[in-house]
Image (cartoon, rainbow, N blue to C red; front, side, top):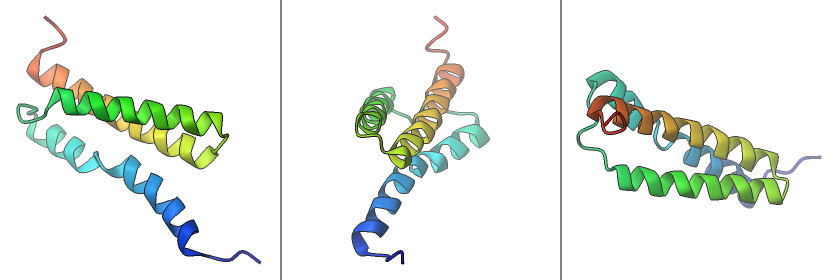
Length: 92
């Protein structure tokens, strides 16, 4: 039988919340067509964190961590793309 324990719930919720944390910002940036208040340095640090979690998941062969990190990475890259597009910082 499969027992639901507190560590299991935490192990499921942590990557889920991590991969969804930037969705509200992505939605707001898309709707307002503005990225003037976003910190590119902060997004870069989050990007580095997600890459490191993805690598860690790969090294320990944790499929859930790999998927969650991959989703979070794609959301963050989309947000960085919006920053570049709306600020035209990457086009100069």
